[in-house]
Every structure is written in C-alpha cells, then in structure tokens.
Length: 232
Image (cartoon, rainbow, N blue to C red; front, side, top):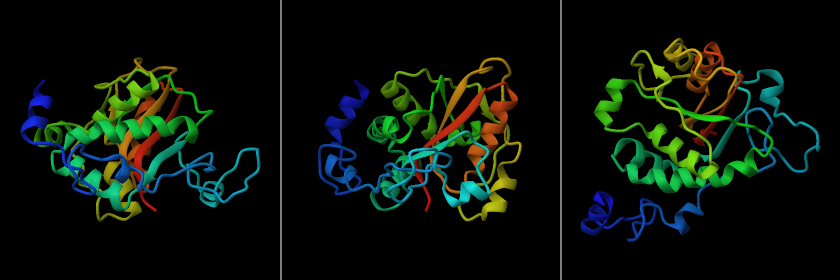
C-alpha cells in the first residue's frame, strides 16, 4: 500500500529514458547488453559460436579457473544496466529490485540449464553499511530471483564479519586482500546444500570467492554464483 501511494504521488520514471510509468521500462531493459549462450561452463563468459557440444571452457578457465563451481551474469556492466545499478545501489531506488531481479530469474534457465541449486544466498553487506543504506541490494535481488525460480532464499546465515573498503578503484590483488576472511557462515544450516550466491556486480570475482569459501567451510556441497552484471 505504501509503495502504491508513493507511486501515485511520485510516478515512476524510467532510469534509462526518463519516461513515466516504470522505474525501468521494457524498451530500455531490451537495450541491456545481455549475456546469452553459448557461455563458458566455468565463468559464464560468452563463447564464439559454434562450440563443441561437450563441456566448453574459455581460455581463462583453462589456465586459471575460478574457485566457484560456476558463475553466471545477466549482462555486462555498461550503459543502461550500469545506470540502473547505480540508482539501485547508491541513490535509494530500491524499487528497481523487481525488474532487475525478474530479468535475472527469467534469464537463468537459458544461462545455466544444468546447474542444480537447492537454496539461494545473497552476498551480505556489513551491518553498519546496511544501516547507512537502509537496505541490502543483493538480498532484494535474491528475493526476486528466488520467487522467479521457486527456490528458497536464506538470509542471516552468511554474514560479513568486518567492514571492507569499497572495491571500486582497487586492482585484482587489492580486491582479493580486501575481502580475505571477510565472511563467516553458521555451520550446519547449509550442510550438503547446493548454493546459488547472488550479488549485483562481479568485477574480478574476489568477493564471490571469499563468500564461497565461508559457505564451503560451513558444509555447503557446491557454491555457484549469479550476478546482475559483470565487468568486461
């Protein structure tokens, strides 16, 4: 009801074209540089067509694979999607969680038709940063993805134990050091489960891998990640 009243007083205006009616209209969503198959079986990077019917890996995953059991992203962090994520993450426009999370859930079956998941877990903010922002953007996305896929979402099990520096502007080694041992997970709750880790952006994958290490340490059978966007 509160959202309906807010929309009536302040009608949604698309972050892409600024037209009235939606926070992200269908035409602007269609301009997102979405990632589509064929993709690397490991990191989800687009592969040239045609590819072999058997497992296909990109050159990076052949030489230095991620420690995740699989990684996928809805689109590249550019243009309309970059703008939407900025508004969603830093400008308080949490209503964007619905169209962005729904787009993720709709794309997942095509991006990862053979990757099983038992439970969805968002990458958490530190408690102090969540209080400042007023919400956790990854948790909002995870809720939408969970509804779309009919999969349970578990929050509060994986926590960020220390407030890390923002990753923006750090190189790969600095990002890895920044988030090392930054997460903890309560033992037992996810034991034997195949987890899908949700976050907004993947740049080097350091945050996702640090979170995955905590989940595996708590007994998760496998940890795969799915982000709204990824850097080129």
